[in-house]
Structure formats: structure tokens, C-alpha cells
Length: 340
Image (cartoon, rainbow, N blue to C red):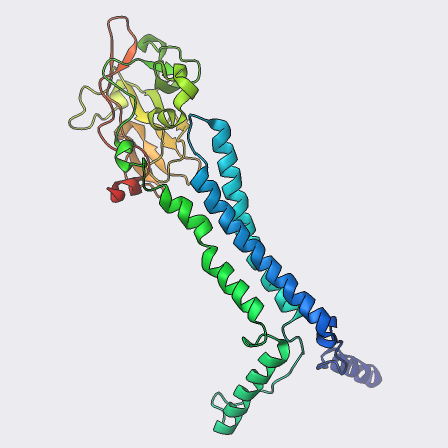
């Protein structure tokens, strides 16, 4: 028994023995051959150059292209080129840094014994000298690698422009936040089913039913005016009038339990489309913001900060549901209001 225990003890000791640093370090080609080191340097600089090209491509695509629902093909081309440019800008820096680290930076394994937090002045000076020597040995010294320094700094400096120029540029020109306050809805305009465009009669809307609604004639517009549809989409719901708590000032905005609310979530603009009849709740599938249709579409759960805008509706002489006016408040995410 004692022999077995001794053997087990030896096994445990071997199992937890620190192998330490390998005695032999395998050098890389760039460590031995100056030509290989120069080749690795040029490859790394080329990757940083690819990043620069990507940035220029993204800015050029934004400046010369067009993003408009009037020309879907041109919009797709511009978006693709901007996206490709951003991809090249980011991947060039990332792969260049990895290649630099793998081929040129110091790769020797070292062990430093534990010591008090505050070293002696002599040890601190020695550590600084070792760091300097290590930087020179690895080829990362600024003086030795001027090409890498220049290409890296240039790539890092301009890469953010691939994203910032299109983003900030689109905030100027014809981009106008105030447009979000208005949609196509006008007094007397009929509510129609999306996508058929069929007008909706009040008698066709049963309790618990939900209709996805667009303004009459929207599908007939040239190129379908996608941005107009995005602002004007509405959910039409009918509740038992006894369950509907009409909000002050909105006494005539509904008809016999039928209410209409913007389909665009006030959090980040996702389409609100999931209706639960028993609780009268509308759910946004993106971040689970939940709105109570029976109480002015107020937020009852989730990150949204304000209710869904309500569309005032009425019924015309032929029994069709029509809008009384446009929305009375901005549509979509609340942060637009802070950009006034």
C-alpha cells in the first residue's frame, strides 16, 4: 500500500511540474534573413495600403453615388460599394496588425520571477533598457520601420472616415429631421390594406382583428416611394368599446372601438406587428417594447420611451375608414426629437 501511495505521489509531482521555457527557440525566416524581413514589412504595408484604398472607395462611392428610392439599382450599387470600402478599410488594418505581430514582432518566451510591486531603481532602469532593446530587436522601432509607421498611421487616421463621411454627410443636404413629423396622411384619405391597396370598411373590422394599413394610392406612386410608406404604415385594431380607455383630447379619434396607431416603434423604428387580443398589447419583436392599445398605446414594457403616435380616423358616407388628418406628433424613434 505504501509503495502504491509513493508511486501516486510521484505521478502527482510529475503532473504538476512546470515545464518552464523551452530550451530551444525556433527562429522565423524574418529573424534570420533580412530579405524575408523586408518582404514581411512590405506585405504588412500592403495590407495597410489596402485599408487606405478601402476608405477612399467608401468616400468616393458616397460622393458620386446616390441613395434614393427613385433609383433602386443605383441605391444598391452605392450601398454595396460603401459597404465594400468599409470592409476593406477595417480588414486591412486588422490583418496587417496580425501579420506584423506574427512575422516581425519579438516572439521569444520569457519568465519573470515574482517580485515586490515596487522594484528597486536599478531594476526599473534595467527593465526600461530591456524594453528598448526588445523593441529594436523585434523591428518595431520607429526609426527602422518607417514604411510600416507611415502606412499604419495613415490607415488608422483615415479609416474612420469610411464610416463618418457617409453618416455625417447624410445629415446635411436634403436630409431633414422635420420631415419625420409629417407623412402622407391627409384629411379624408382612405385607409387601405397593405399591400393590396383595398379600402377598408368599418363593418369589415371585427373585434380582435388587425389590419396592416397604408394610405390610399400609395402603391400607385412612382417607384412606390418607399420612404413615404415607411413613415405612413399603420396598424388598425378593433377593441370592444368598453375596453377602450379614450385619452383626453382624443375623444373623436376612434370609431366604435376602432383605433389606428403608427406601426413604427418609438424605440429604434422597428415594425410593431404582434398583437395579443386578450391583453390588447402590441409587441415590437426587435427589443420587446410593449404598447397597450386600450390605453393610448402607452409603453408598458421595454426600452421605448413614448407611446405609438395615433392616427385620428373617422368613417365617410360610404362606410370606409378615413383619416381625419396627419399624425399630430413625430413618427418613429424618440431620438429624432433631440435632433431638432
